[in-house]
Length: 558
Image (cartoon, rainbow, N blue to C red; front, side, top):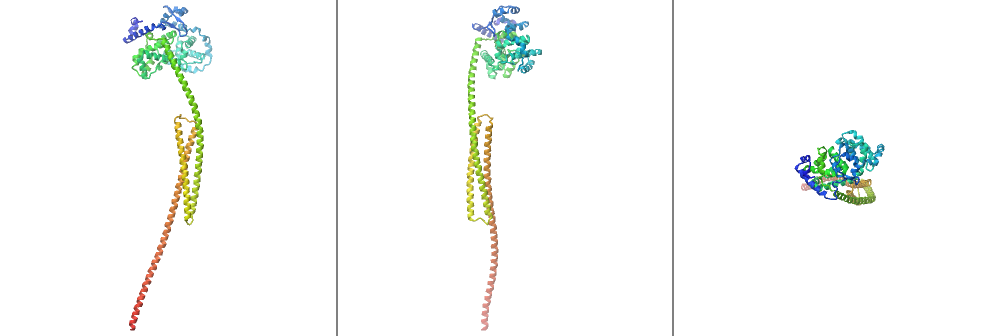
C-alpha cells in the first residue's frame, strides 16, 4: 500500500510528517518483501506449522469451513483478522485459532477447582489490587470466574503456578467466553504461545524479548534510543508489561481487543510491531521529556483515544524481519551463556573465598587463643612482680618508721636504708619497663587486629568479640598496675619527704634549745664577768687605798 493508496479517512488524519514516515516505512516493507525467507503475507501459527491461505470470504464461511480454510487459505484470513473479528464470532474464532477444543485438561477442570491451591491467597490479593485499576475489569461479577481459571491453572501447572501477568489475559478471555472455555484457551496460550516461558521466575524469555525490542529500537529509532540511554531509561521499564500482558494494560480496550485478535493468529510479532509503532508516533514528544515524563507518557496510553485501525496499519509499516529476530535471539543466548560462565566462575571464586575465610578464621582462632594465653602469663608475672614490689615497699616503710621511732638513725642504718631504697627503685624500674613492653606489644597486636578486621564485614562472631574484650581488659589491667606503681612511688616519695621534714623540724627544735641554752649560759657568763669586773675594781681600789695609806703613814711617821 503506497501513500497514494491510503484510505481517505486515514489520510485526512495524518500530518505531513507522519505521511513521510509512512512512505519511508512502506519502502522498507517493500524491500523486506523481496526477501525470499521473509514470512510477510504468510500466517504461521506459533503452535504448529499450519499455513493458512484463502481468498476473500465472509466470516460465516470461515467458521463453517474452518478445516479447509485453516489448511489452504492464509492471506485473506490474515487481512480479515487485522481488520477485526466480529464481536459475536470472537469467542468461537479464538478457540479455533488456538485449537482449544482439543485441550486434554478440559475434562479435569471441575476436579482442579475442588483441589487445594497454595496460591489462592495471592490470587485473591492480585485480583483485589488489579481489578479496580483497569477498565477491562469494571464488571466485578467476573472476579470469581477469573479466580477459578487462575486457580485451576496454578493447580494444573505447579511449576509456573500463578503470575500477576496472567490476570489481564484471563480477564479478557472471561469477558468473551465461559470460564471453562477461557481455561482451555489459556492452557493453549501458555503452552504454545510462549506465555509459559515469559512467566517463568528466571525471566529468560522475557529478557530475550526485551533485548530484541531494544536492538530494533536502536536500529530503527537511533535518535530515540540515544535519548533513552542519555536519560538512563532502559527499555525494560516500559516494555515488560507489553510482553507479559500482551499490551492489554497499556492500550484502550478497543485497541487491545484488536491487538489480541492478531496475537491469537500471529503470536508475539504483533507486540513488537505495535510497540515500535507507538514509539514512532510518540517519538517527537518523548525526545523532549526526561525519564519521569517518558514513563508517564508510555504509561498513560490506555487513557488516550487511539484509533485501532490507524495503530494497526502503522504497525504493519514497521520493518520486521524474522531472520533478524532469530539472529538477535542467538546473540542474547550467547550473551547469557557468557554471563552464566562468568557467574559460575564467580561462584567458584566465592566458594574458594569462603573456604579460605573459614581456614583463616580457624587460624585466627588458634593464634588468638595462643596470644591470649601468652598475655595472661605476662599479666600474671606483672601482677606477681607488682605484689612483690608492694610487699618490699611496705617492709621498707616499716623499717624506716621503726628506725625513726628510735633515738635516731645511725650512719650504718641510713646507709642500709639507702641501699634498700636503691634496690627497690631498681626493681620498680624493671617492673615498669616490663609493663611498658607489655603495653606496646598489646598496642601492636591491637593495630594488626584492627587492620585485619577492616577488610572484613562489620559483624564479627562471638569468639572475636570475646578476644577483643579480653585485649581491652588486659590493657586496662596493665594501665591499673602502672597507676598502682606510680601511686606507690608517690607515696614513698611523700613518706621520705615527710620524714625529712620531721628530721629538719627536730633538728631546728634542737638547735633552738641549744641556742636557748647558749643564751642562758652567755647571760650567766656575762653576770660573772660583771661580778668579776666589780671585784676587780674593788680590789684595785683597795690596793690603791693601801698604797695611799702606806704613803701617808711614812709621811706621818717622819
